[in-house]
Length: 75
Image (cartoon, rainbow, N blue to C red; front, side):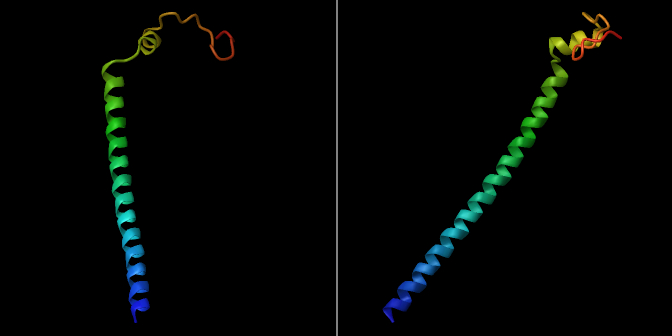
């Protein structure tokens, strides 16, 4: 009878450990997705507020000699 109780206790402990591990994993996934969303929003806002020098030059056409940088072909 003691062996049955020991086995039942062992099984309950393993299942409890799996449950706790699963809950913690899910919480970590949710938190990671939330932080990822915040990071994307912050990056978008910063890029919108403070465009890079390259982007500003491209908007104004500074340094544009009419060529394609990738192929070297002239337009």
